[in-house]
Length: 424
Image (cartoon, rainbow, N blue to C red; front, side, top):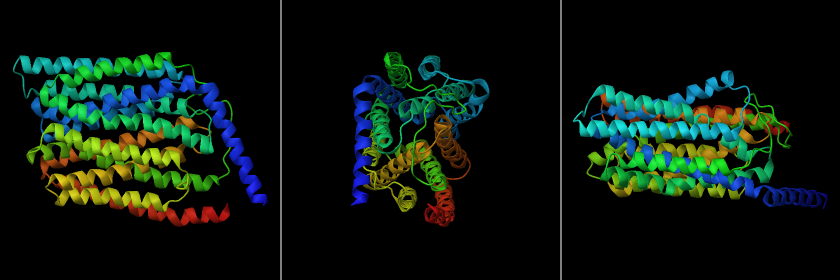
């Protein structure tokens, strides 16, 4: 009886928190969801079209891989340097600055593409590397966007209220995966310039969403100092070990998608399929990712259950095996369904464990984004290098081995996690 009384009090408290957020803060939060959607739809359409743009302007498999890798390397380096140059930050100003720089970089890439096709400069290495360099600049600017936006959205929430807020945030950006890739694939099939026009226009809308958003409720600096403290009843050792298990999965997931959205794009069209159909495949991935994230945000039964993270890691391995041995469209559809479901759960898990019980939430968000960028750098960069110097399928064998190593590392952490549970 005492247990149910305690449970009811917790439920009432969390319901009151949620009602307070809905009544007092919803007008302030919804533009942030819009900003997350617009940044995501532009990024997903751009990086769906980029492998084909790089190929069409005369780039090699290596250039295709280096393009996204350079973008995420710029992102990673700026994440590491932010602490030295930004003692404090205003999320509204930094995110608007970020969207402006990315928009300008996209416009310049569009200008280069126009010059290449109108002056017969296809294969010009200086211009190809200029496109890659501008991608790196845009990646560096993105480091001022996602970590700050995520910490702004999550503020100082914990428990079920935090899970719901993160669920809405994840639904916003992952919902863009339902349209962005399809738009990018169909646009690049018609013109190499259309993706740049679409992306730059979308970034203007993103800027407007950020402009109408209210200031963050809590002032935070990059070192993690925040006003107010959340409460979480979980053993902190338990949370930290689950963070690392989820972090290994997050790295593996983004390494796989980095490879799939760069080298597999070329392989897929070489097998006789169109760029639009590749966009459809990424859209299917997005639907599964969106479904997985939405369910993770709606339910809490998976919290602190590492076995589900192991299952998601295994799903990544299965998807790579299907690439190695599959040649037909139904097999490719199946592999993106499997990858999307596993990817969504892994992402939601790391986002939850990263923010759960964290006082230095901005730092955790930077680590989250740094893990993502490192995964893409390894997946896209190594995939391009291996494909250019060995054979077409060798990058997927390399990635399968990497996912397997990650699985073993997760297993190594499991007994220590059980010890942490017994102590709690």
